[in-house]
Image (cartoon, rainbow, N blue to C red; front, side):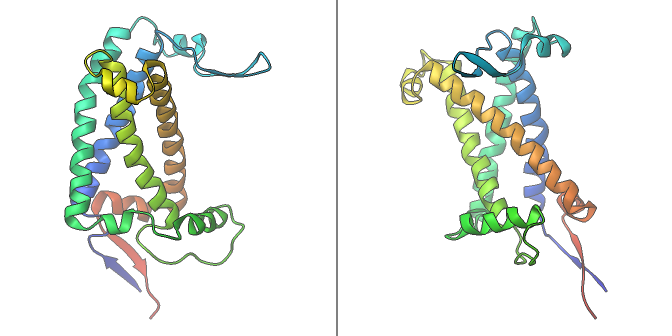
Amino acid sequence: MKRIVENKHPLAIRWFHWVNFPVLALMIWSGLLIYWAYHPYKIQVAGYTLVTFFPSGFFKALNVPFRLAEGMSWHFALMWLFTLNGILYVVYTFISGEWRYLLPKRNSVREAWQVVLHDLGIRKEPLPVEKYNAAQRIAYTSIIVMGLGSLLTGLAIYKPTQFWWLTTLMGGYETARLIHFALTIGYVLFFVIHVAQVVKAGWTNFRSMIAGFDVVDEQA
């Protein structure tokens, strides 16, 4: 027997989610257009380069070179929408009480490890039934913190003279730029894991983020 669970994801949460997804994706893309102009980051060991983040061939393949002005225009315009959407999301979660489902609990770190083991097929016992498991609580809260970090470091490198105090607080221009870049890599990793989890969870879970309701099986 199937039962419809109404309002699994409130309308506001769904709007914030689906606005943020393309905005953040476009900000990452426009950030690449900016990063092309000066892309020094790489991982070296004993003088040998192990990883070069986005080598020149990558930018040429995507027709990125010589689009710095375009990238800056898009990035700074989308920044306001990204910030506004983030602020409204945080305000809504506190006013509505949704924060109770999103913030990590005292044992979330330990429980999150059990979620990882379950997803890898190592733990066979079923996980506790709750709206967001411990790993999701940590991940979704981390994204909010990362969003704030991106905003602050972005302002620090966007207006280092006007916001000199913020640039100093972020460790200087170069450090702020490195943190901003590292956060972007974090978003990409989150996207990959998030999409993989959605695929693993199946259509029902994806539908609930679009329509707001879920269909569950109940034993007669």
